[in-house]
Image (cartoon, rainbow, N blue to C red):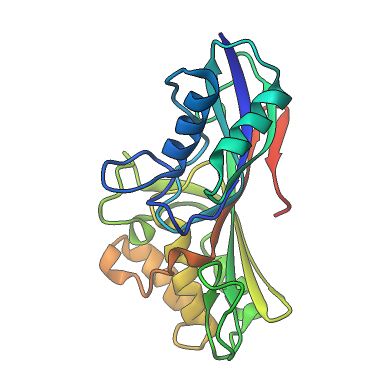
Length: 253
């Protein structure tokens, strides 16, 4: 039995999320089906995170245990061939004994893309959140720093979030304008369900002048989902990488 580490890229639009589900297609199911086609084995592919429906990944670490003797390169090529036409690709594959994609993960990173332009999206439809009026990225960044640190993020978690505790330590929440886009970078050991999308939604309210930094801080202090101003859509959210002891997997960001 060999444990293989994968770096997975996918467009989340056709899927109900990463995790295998009974009511729709998932990224996990597509990869597990491809591996079965290659090896004849029924395996579980474990990822470092679980993205929601419509959320994307540029570099999702994952692992699977496979009995068939095969090199990492041949396995990667064979899985990619069988993933077509799904918008999923294995970017890297290596042997990784005694490594666990989820439990060994010490940090996760997300990017949220806001397309801040009047014109409708063409190539990026479903891949960014279009806000057609100007946003103040500097005000958004300044307000975002009020959320950095260890807090009770109840306001920013989904009502059906299954985490045992709403306490999380947010290591980074940066906002920057990149041409006609606004990028929000978030990093933490772990996130609550919908936490990034909820934070971005409220930062958008700061950017368009409806909220101040104090309003954002008050929403955090309320510890109440009803205090949330806005939950951003999944379109612009990307899992971009994860950190492990002695290892970093991911795209820039």
